[in-house]
Image 1 (cartoon, rainbow, N blue to C red):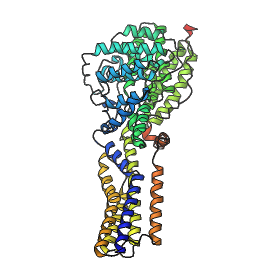
Image 2: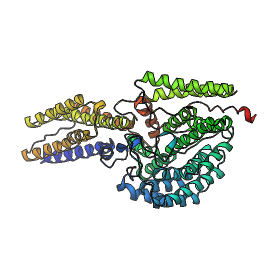
Image 3: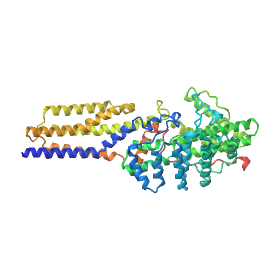
Image 4: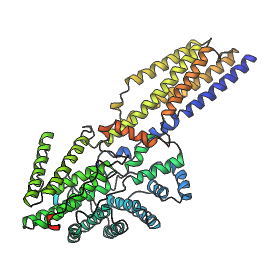
Length: 550
C-alpha cells in the first residue's frame, strides 16, 4: 500500500510538473498562433505582391476569437490609438460603413494627423484605383491589359470627401507635404487636372521640409492593443499587425506623378520649359521627401519610383530590359539626359542635387532588389521565414522534451521493454524530422509536421507517464523512483532547457526589438518589407530653388 501511495503521488507530481513546463514554455500559444498564421484566412499569406491587392482581397479582420477581449479594452480606453486599433481589426477595411466610423473618430481627435492620414489611405483602396501606364495616370489599363473595374456608384461623393479631408489635413498640419500630395492625387482622380496642376505649380520646392505618411501608426496601434488585451505575443503576429498598411496610399502618388509629368512633356513640346520645370521640381521634391522621411520601406521605394517618373524626359518605351546590366544602363542614360537638360536650362545646382539624390536612391534600390527570385516583392519569403522560425522553435522545444523524457524513463529501475522501445522510437522519429526539416523550403502546408511534432513532444510524454503509473498500480510496484540521482539530473535539465526556450520567447518589452533584429537578419527577404525601426535613410537635403524664383 505505501508503494501505491508513492506511485500515485509521484505520478500526479510528474503530471503537474509536466503540465507546468508545457504551459510555461509557450508551446500551446505558439502552436495556436502558427496554426492561425498559416490558415487560408491569414491576411499576411495573401500579400504575395502589390499587384494583387485590390478592394476585393484586402486583408480581412484578424483574430475574430479575440475580438471580445480587444473590445473590452477599447471601450474603456480614452486613447485614440486603442479605439482606432479595434476599429481596424473589427471592421472590413475600405467599406463605406467603416470609413464613416473612422472619420467620426478623426473628428473626435482633431489633433491626431494619423487618423486623417489613415482614412485617406483606406479610401485609396477602393476609390483611387491602381494604374501603371504612363500618361493615363489613375484612369487607364492595368499591366495585364485588362481594363479597370468601374468605380462604385458613390465614388464622386467619396472623392469629394477625400479632397476635402486632405485639404483639412493640410490646413491643420501645413508643414507635412503628405496631405498636399493626397489632395493633388484626389484632384487628378476627379479629372480636375487643371486644379491639380495649379496646386503643383504654386507649391514652391522650398515650401516643405517634412513628410510623414503615418503608415506604421496602424500597426503600432494594433500591436499595442493586442499586447494590452492578450498579453505576451509572438514575433510572427507582430509582422501581421503591420502587413495591412503596406501599399494602398502609394498608388495615387505614382498616378499623380504620371499625370503631372505627362503635362510637363506637353508644355515642353510647346516651348514652355519654365512651367514644365516647375511641375517636375514639385514632383521631385515630393519624391525626395518620401524617400528620406517615410517610416515605411515601401514608402522609401515609392519615393524612388516617383523620382524616376519626374526625371523621365521621354515617354516610356514599354520594352522591358533583357538583363540587369541593360536596366542599369538605361536608367543611367535617362538620368544623365535629365541632368544635361537642367544644365542647358541654367540649373546646374539643381542638376547636382538631382545627381546626388539619384546615386543614393540607386544604392538603396539595388539593395532592395536582392530579394528572392521566387518572391520578387519579398513578402512571401519573409512570411515563410517567420513561419519556419516558429517551426524551428517547436521542433527544438519538443525534441528537448522527448530527449529528456527518454533519460527519465531509461533511468527508472524497472522499465518495461515496450515503454523503452516506444520512447526510443519517439526520439528517433523526432530527431529524423528535425534533421530532414528544411526551413528554407518551408511551405504553408508544412503545418502538418508541426502537428506531428507537437503530439510527440507534448501529448505523448504525459500519456506515457500516466500509463506507466497506472501499470505500476496494477502490478503493485513502485515503478517511478523519481528521487534517483539520474532522475533529478534529468528533471533539472528539463527545467533548464525549457526555461531557456521560454526566455527566448518575445515579451511585450522586447518584442519590437526581436522583430527588428529578425528583419535585419533576413535583410534580403525583408528589403521590401516595412522598416519598423523607422530610421531615415539619410538626412533630407532641400532642393535648391529654381533660377526663375531667385
